[in-house]
Length: 183
Image 1 (cartoon, one colour):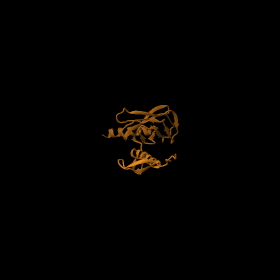
Image 2: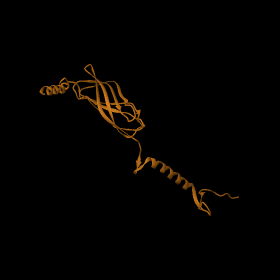
Image 3: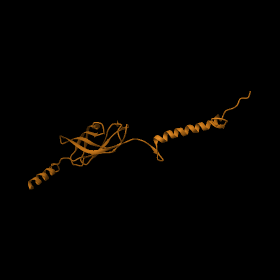
């Protein structure tokens, strides 16, 4: 049992002792909107002393009802010195029309360290919401039609006045600025 514990402890400490670079990556913004053009930004930090060349950064999101979708963020060569961080920005891509919620994702980074290419995978999450505005607690699907209806009634009231008449309907609309002709 002691031998198994020593082998396990040694295997956990080997990457740190061998000087293998430890990098961190995080998504800059976790919020996106349904059917909007959104771009992803990934912050990559190199806390190790060795230089690291980043060749690929992408994010894969597992949308419901879709296959996992890959969104490329960076493809090229960017060298990060030890202790340096950099934010990689991707191109804007249209988000799918899906149920609002929080979904799992992962960031994939390919880096070269001392001539050796390594892949790193970091788990993260992305939250997708429906875009909308609310003014005074009234949502846009009520506010916009209500505003247009009120505006049309005000324009009508500006150009017409109601005049009482016998029968049905009890009122009729008469132009406010109508001039009678003299003959």
